[in-house]
Length: 234
Ligand SMILES: C[S@@+](CC[C@H](N)C(=O)[O-])C[C@H]1O[C@@H](n2cnc3c(N)ncnc32)[C@H](O)[C@@H]1O
Image 1 (cartoon, helix red, strand yellow):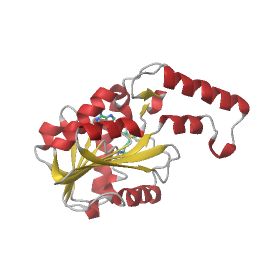
Image 2 (cartoon, protein in one colour):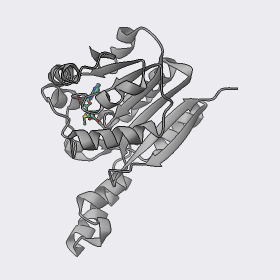
Image 3 (cartoon, rainbow, N blue to C red):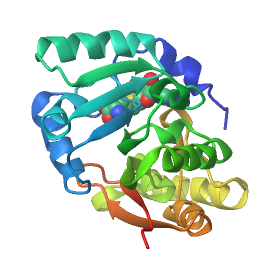
């Protein structure tokens, strides 16, 4: 499958292209986020998009650093935050190579929703290590809405809830076989939506780095899950 340069892809986008971007849905998504993290302190929302979701985090933290690589997206994010009268969100244009030197401090937590699907596995492993060294010892790193490749194929070929046709079932088997046998990297190229990862990829990295990990299913997306990483405190 053709590889997309995701940084170029996002550089000119001004909307995250989520399934729903209305306030009611964004509030529900943040309620889900809050089930998994400790409130308070300073957090980094990495890949904040237009801050439609980030703004609902605002009452729960002292300060939020909302970063994104896309200047166009940050223009929309700033408008949204200003319009909502929020004072504790600051914006930062950065990618995974520049964000750490720009924030210059350890944060209490890192949230990243729908972003690591644009990272290849080596890039992602390095990013996780950087996240760990830039959070406090009692902090958290949460990747929300990671794509499970097989569940995504079920969704894409319309097989969820037994609604699929035989032809789609066959297509799904062929695609899954291709991903399993011919894509040898942990990241599974799913096209425009980015890369899918199986939970085992994160579990291995956490075991290697002596980190606690929890994996939970997404409430609102059939094929996504969340990865919650914490340091082990002795
Ligand atoms: C699908 S949107 C999600 C936005 C937001 N987190 C949300 O859930 O609504 C993905 C965002 O990640 C940003 N992004 C993609 N690759 C990135 C990278 N390497 N570093 C920082 N941001 C990135 C894009 O610019 C975009 O705003």
